[in-house]
Amino acid sequence: MDGKTNPPVWLKPGALVKAQHWYGVVEDVAVSENRVMVFIKSPKGVVRAQRDAAEWLEYLEGQIVPAELGYPPFFPVDRTHHE
Image 1 (cartoon, one colour):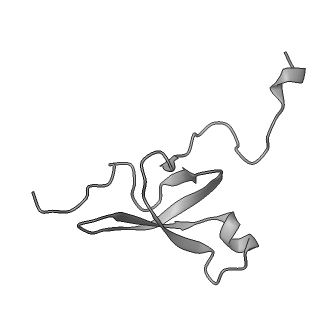
Image 2 (cartoon, rainbow, N blue to C red):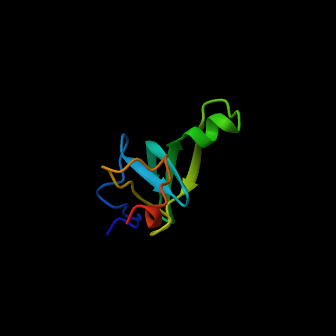
Image 3 (cartoon, rainbow, N blue to C red):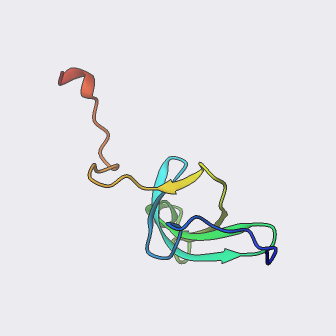
């Protein structure tokens, strides 16, 4: 073993991810002996007026996950009134 932490296979540049309660696109992944860091570009960064709308986050299993496709996450729907 080379002493590095191994990121999940799906965690690579271009992947659409959900990080806690927001969505973004993976721009870069950095791996060291101790941690995996993910550079994520998101609308949250634009709202915060960050220079490039991206930020480095440490990958923690369950906190950054692949985004579910097929249902727009940007429009919450109360399904209780439609049943």
